[in-house]
Length: 163
Image (cartoon, rainbow, N blue to C red; front, side, top):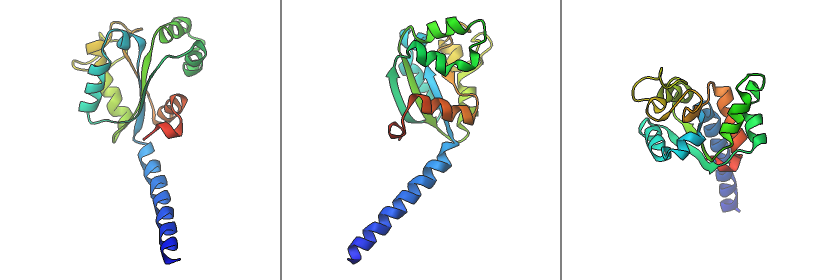
């Protein structure tokens, strides 16, 4: 009976610790997507290497292809913009690599790592400066806020896919 109570308490402690750890770390996560052009041009490995070298830990990752409905839902914030149709067509033309990354100050640090949306304006050594070909085909997506990082990560990954 004593052993049972000890194990029960230990399991309860582990569950509480896991919950607190996930809650604390959740604000230090961001979402990224290597876009179809980055995958098509063979830059997946190099981009992931830059991410790892910058100190990010990959919490979840998968290669997948967005459907038209997926892309329209994911980019719904842009549905009134003139480029929306082109954006949806681009994002559905080939596979992407979606990932959730973890690091202190994840969103801001990752935005710095990827560089400006227009590769001509991106700083030297950034992912977009190295691998993007245009403003429309800029190799990688990065969340612009902690709130959007959580929304975008949850769009692509279930809870059991995040480690």
